[in-house]
Length: 309
Image (tube, rainbow, N blue to C red; front, side, top):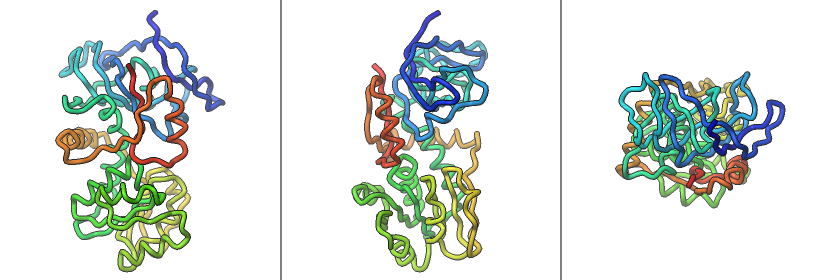
């Protein structure tokens, strides 16, 4: 049996991740086998494990690479194609590997002008950014506050919102303020300063139309800068812990397979230079755990990716 190097969770009761040898995945009829060129690093990669799987379990949810095998039900994809793919919660393991299995419906062609690293940085952050904007329901002239605006999702939301004529404010450490302004941010808040919510409210003339809480634990503070009757959208899954006040609607972003088509459109915009893709660091395969630990600090400017070969 052919084997490969992977980064895997070793047990269900431990969060430890190590590089180990594992069999190359066997693909199903509607799947392809991808030789991984790069994979994205996500905040929850260590913990995002499906129930009932065997350990060690290869982690990771997104990547880019070259198709080396196709199932007998796969259409429109050929060996040698460069693709972007996702591997979310599939039993045969994720993207942190030399080879990965991916369902054909998750595939997006990787444009010739983009590297594997760029392709691997798009799927999760891009989908979350698009679904966040859909949930926010804003129009030109509205105002938006983003908590955790300098990361992979926030960097995209700033640009996409500003392109629609939405005025954007966001919070991040002071060192990331110039970066955010360059993407289209109007007002930068330093979350380490106790009076930052008042600064946002003043900028927005009494409160923003809506807020997007990307980082865990930022929902309550984000709600404080929203005008009466506005909207708060959370990305991290902690909306249930937030008690709505002043007529504000609080909800978690919802995931839809239909967004995949929009992600493909976003990839095309990135390839044309219409949207900037911010990659903070590219790590070699051997240093993937360093990339994970850095991402888990939640102090990011854009996306970190791991490049193979």
